[in-house]
Amino acid sequence: DTGVSQDPRHKITKRGQNVTFRCDPISEHNRLYWYRQTLGQGPEFLTYFQNEAQLEKSRLLSDRFSAERPKGSFSTLEIQRTEQGDSAMYLCASSTTGTGNYEQYFGPGTRLTVT
Amino acid sequence: GNSVTQMEGPVTLSEEAFLTINCTYTATGYPSLFWYVQYPGEGLQLLLKATKADDKGSNKGFEATYRKETTSFHLEKGSVQVSDSAVYFCALSGSYNQGGKLIFGQGTELSVKP
Image (tube, each protein chain N blue to C red):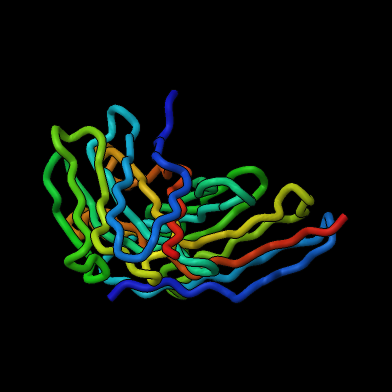
């Protein structure tokens, strides 16, 4: 059973550059979530997709952030004009909606460092 | 809005000690409740869950009971091991109409000494 995978695992970028992260969910999962986790804090919800539709975006997701899930499979999260405050761990999770209890499976995360 | 509050860490225990990590929540409707664990250098793993009031979730010797009257979901283990050292997160998810997103507490770091 292949779990949720994320790429890259680590990204170091200079302020002002654009970065893109990829998430591959568990294959039969139709919901995909993005969270952000800063040091010493719990993950915070950013956005989620059901199949290819982006159904909710947090107010944390500024104009510089955009997420896509073409064809309802993998997803990408892009951050434009990165700022030092964007430094965090970006987590992806997936789930089904069949059972209704929303058990989410997390990937290993992408750690972003903005210098 | 929905929120989760956990006891602050770090918590340091000796091996075989009893563990309690407190978690309380605020939510509308009937949320599902979860405990996730993050071992050093690893991703979040679901430890246990409860989907309705009075349900008890259990896994690997850990237990938590969904108490609607006290809006709590405290994590307990009778005898901790060094390998339980990790950060523990309490979380809730709302109803279907709320999209199932998870709201996490700030995490409680547990360190178990031999």
